[in-house]
Image 1 (tube, rainbow, N blue to C red):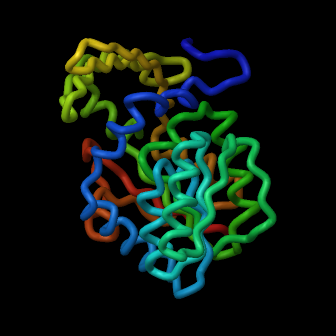
Image 2 (image 1 turned 90 degrees about the vertical axis):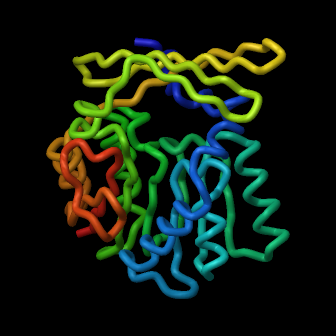
Image 3 (image 1 turned 45 degrees about the vertical axis):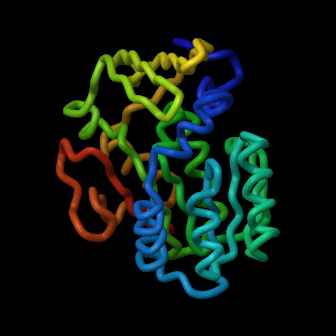
Length: 252
């Protein structure tokens, strides 16, 4: 497997040109709809506390902050964390970004809700996912909600998987080749980014594939109860083959 010993291969994926590609993938209306759903589903009020895991450039963390939430955002990329902190300071938001490996994160707070968006939970194998879920469980209040956004559940990948694809983002051409492998079930991806002036950047990533039943078992072991799975947040119950899922778990 393309994984450096002791280090998650996905840790470096968002460096370089892909950092800017990721910024353009989700329209603002999608982010705002997701944030409104999180607030409603989790019963959040002004001053409620939220942990945003693997927050990226802070599209959810900052939007939640603008709604009056207290947010701790965590990402391993310093550029993203610095950007969030700078924008939060400019807008006087109660949002703090921590640059850290999420598997090693230590915080003292207990949160009203935790979110993990953008398919980020799929970056980890079963052992690390269980470790991560256990850590989240220890930092969320009883009855608090944990919302996971994924497009790499087994029920999605079986229908949506493509071996090759390409996209253009302004002056960047993105070519993607993927392999669906087993034991453990995963999609290994090689992405080639080519600029208009011929510069090339190659990235490798792996998304681990769990069925809803497998994920529910891991949640159960870490003191969560799976409440529902949606394909459109709060509006449409997930059906196999839908392109994305929003998984709602509650701390027991």
